[in-house]
Image (cartoon, rainbow, N blue to C red; front, side, top):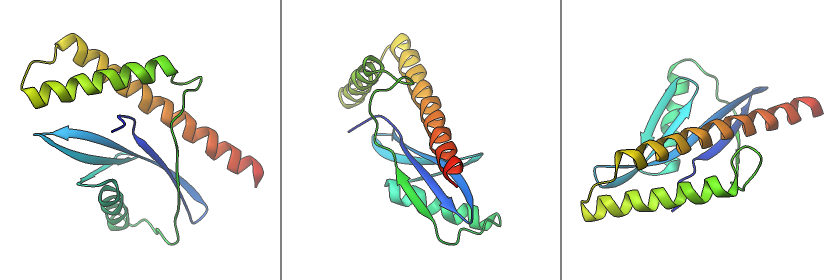
Length: 139
């Protein structure tokens, strides 16, 4: 399983929202967290996390109307290199192995893993901004 977050660009009512869905391993099970602005929801599947986010946004008064979602496929780029992707995958595999075997995952590796996840999230945000700018420039 890929450790990179799914990044969805949700277009509705003339506005664009960036929404990231990241997989997490909590208490021996995968969960998915949807993040949109200051909002966070989690579910057992990416779809459930997305649905809960929509429900949360509607509860806050958002008019979701018709929504188009674009899924971004991750490939190395100038924001997150192939080496970073490979190291992230390697650390995620080690982390999952340590959970499965109930062995320690070193604090140093945990810090490196956390930093790479944050770097990929920031890269995803920058990619999203590029897509938004391209769409706005084409209007």
